[in-house]
Length: 198
Image 1 (spheres, rainbow, N blue to C red):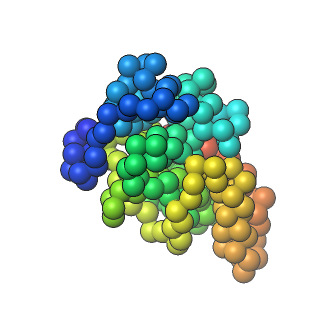
Image 2 (cartoon, rainbow, N blue to C red):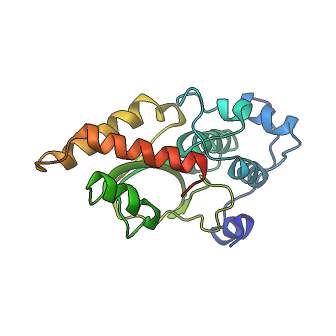
């Protein structure tokens, strides 16, 4: 499915960007005039972590972004446009069933799953995930353990703390698994995603 078709399907409003705050100014300077056009622009940016994970404006300079920064930027714009597009943090388990590409890493680390934290957007009861350019699926359908509405300013320390707590709780009664093992496997997965090799 094309992104614009999905936005139409979930009936997301598409207001014109008129005011001139920091986030609006950036898009207007690029002749990006509507919310949908802004979503399309951010979606097409390559996947990759920015230098400072807490500053979602960095994706504008570095021309790349991960789930947190991409969705925080759009959530910030939507807030300025009075559109109830909520930034959401989902905690779930990465498994071969929901992410077949992770099977090799799980096998290498002798893991059945990796507890993961992922940011996306919600509009009414619909999810919107624009993390990866070229994606044709924009809903986020994972077996969520927890879902939390957050602000764009919470994508740094708050998100990391929630993620760490989720991992610690998951490994608590697992004899041969610890936090460091999980984190190493997760970082290898993120690196592969950034290089586009999975």
